[in-house]
Length: 167
Image (cartoon, rainbow, N blue to C red; front, side, top):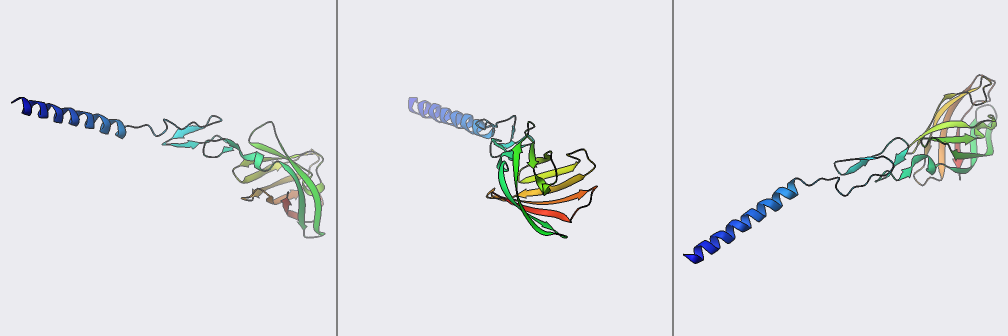
């Protein structure tokens, strides 16, 4: 009789432990070990990043991929191709980049919104002289080039509306 009771008790103990481990594994928090940087939030094991950040853990500032000096090849319908230098700098707002010397026209920087591999130039008048610019750019996967398409209005233009910026 003692043998049955010992084996029965052992069997019940094993079943109880199995249920405890099964229950614990079913209710595991997928975000338990995920740490999202820069105020990112974990959803089902993956980080959702705030505007201006990207990466598996929101550790990359999107605009930083674009910061640097460039040689610009600009296509213009009236004057052909123009080659000049331009720069992209970080703005105080983490979602923005400052474009200097775009179109060789503006004394002040043009502000672009950075999101992933995109730069968006919302309609603006950088020099407050009535000349508007708006458009967008795409950062290449290797971050060596940015292809811009834009519109300039409010002054005589030579049809410059696209450019490739190369580091």
